[in-house]
Image (cartoon, rainbow, N blue to C red; front, side, top):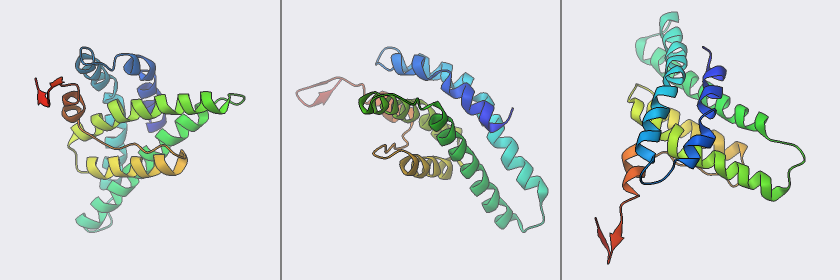
Length: 163
């Protein structure tokens, strides 16, 4: 499966994921998304592995080039997919609403999944996606966070104490 197909598969879960973003349903929903995202992980690994096998450079330079290529390809695929789904004829308000839903999905599922990967390029990948997303979608800044950080945000507070 190529990166484009893998991105399409990720976004098939967007509506369900956004609907299931609550204290009670986020953890099981994220777990389901992790299963869906395996093809995305494999597509990224294939790009990385292909570059690493091509050789011809010292190990460090080759690794650096592989990381940059993986990050660039993934960020471009995510941005291109969302751009292609933009509908002509929608009012500005509807476009902003749809973009907000894309932002929410990226911030609560895609980026936390990437942060869970713990491969040689996950941090740089998250940064590249943040940069590409901000450049492509005006007023749409997303920030990578771990699943634990997001799930921890659901803690209830009373008089300043979490419980």
